[in-house]
Length: 314
Image (cartoon, rainbow, N blue to C red; front, side, top):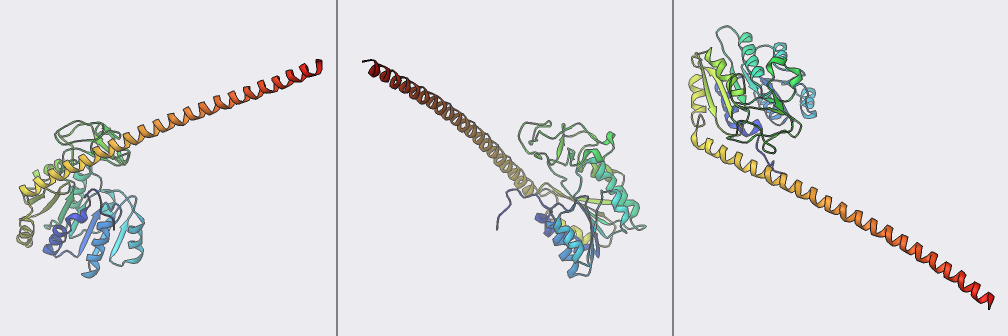
């Protein structure tokens, strides 16, 4: 069994997420963004064991997610983009948001959940990627699907590193899978910024921040009956400085691995270029040798003919 090089999935937060779902007694969960279906499968398994329901909103579902939709009575797939697709579903007890990592999408998702919520009852909302790099910088998978005024200048062929608000050649990047905003920070930029702007209008809500594996945010009602239980689940993780330090170290190690991969790729390219150059030289020498052999053969033939003429005249 292979071990993933980069920890990035919500599966790394399973203890916190399922602890929160248990704390609120969730019987219905909506997931936004299923990627390859790893955490989606865990959610579906959790739901089946509790006779709960899970729905996943995903515009391009993986085959594993489609299979869940075909085989599990506890799971439903909604093919579409959030937040529009959220309106196709009934209000849920909990939402897990890990879709488009852009300010306007996340803010719209939070506002849509608000509008759909039952009167006086705010659901549990769990958000991934509230930490670096997407906490303060938009990350675009499909910028053409957004309103033009909601898309910041961005690049597909550049990366980001901690401590640099711009973009760099190399660094953490999407390799064509996603683009990054050219600048970090400022208004209307990043997942965490969207959460903070949303919370500024909702003083009744509580926010917990788990600073590991790109950051996990949890939003819940401070007056809910389940608030104390949620606080107990989240307290060991919330803004934990040791987790923050470990995350910084993880990111540094990840960037070093990416740097080494880039160096290996460049070295491999140089070796291939040198090999190709050697191959061209070999071909050139072979061509010259063949030409010399042909010339030598022609000279031998001329010599034979001359010898024959000499013998015939003597």
